[in-house]
Length: 180
Image (cartoon, rainbow, N blue to C red; front, side, top):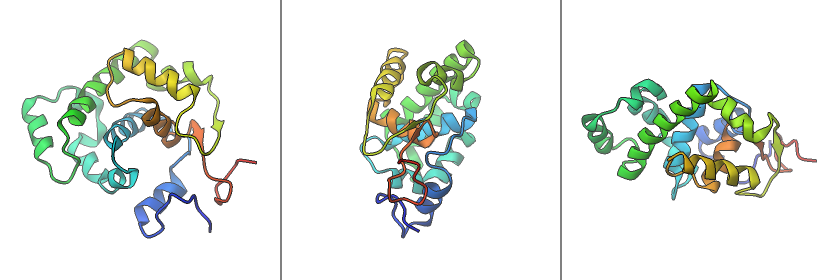
């Protein structure tokens, strides 16, 4: 089977992610938080690097339980920064906690984070390839930054929207393509 060019066929985790998760709509609140945190850790790195550490991130961040993450104290932050199995960047660790608190505020304001996302998407899927940003990622990024989130630039948010299935970007040659 032909897959998107970026998919490292030698990495089973990457193939699994490409085939069964990437660009497939998943609006479960815990998943939305997980992907937002993981995408923010990707900044300056490859997605493959983050994906290879995903299970360790799940353990380190209490399976992305928002209430637990929002209550992290300095001791927990220090343990995360010492955890060699995840990406140990102090700014990104602090951003993950801060962004989780803002995520929860948005949930309280809109009922769910997905309801908030729908105010930008009109509940539609975008089909496009060969882009790293678009008007949607620009607008969403600006709003999240205005609310105080960090590591949520337009490129990261575009990747996030692909990860959760709001933007569908499988390349034309890929067996999963829906692009005419």
